[in-house]
Amino acid sequence: MTKKRKSVKKNNELKKIEELEQKVSESNEKYLRLLAEWENYRKRTIKEKSVSIEYGKELIISKILPILDDFNRAQKAGEEQKKGDGFLLINQKLSDALQREGLKKISVSKGEEFDVNQHEAISQIPTEEKKLKGKIVEEIEAGYLLNEKIIRFTKVIIGK
Image (cartoon, rainbow, N blue to C red; front, side, top):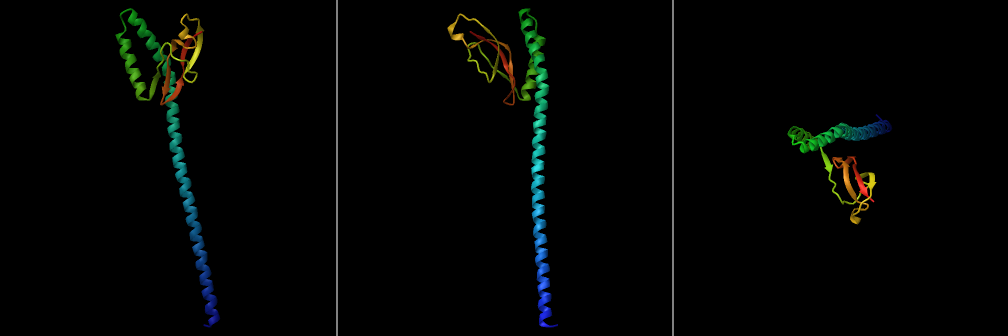
């Protein structure tokens, strides 16, 4: 072979090697992009499942809260009639089960400052005590947090 042919052959081989290296590089980039997309997809679906589960819990617990209120009212009526141990037991078991799922009652006391972020004023009544004006006089319906998110505001009466 002549020098010229060897040179041309060598140039062709170098071009093929460069082309192959470029293809390998492109393939690696595509692989890394696909891997990153897969990881993002996996994280997103895990988060969506978690949000969906929390929403489901919130929906179910919101439907159970009126039943819990009825138990509390029945318990108070039973205490007045010296009956109610059964209500107390059922109420306690239900409350414990809901607490394990992340439900917390928002505590409210008479004379507490009205907070629009936690309370819903359903009425105002005149009060003789000046210190109760604009403050909570009575809790009508308990409010609840589910995993630190308010799912029901506390319904209160405030003094005017």
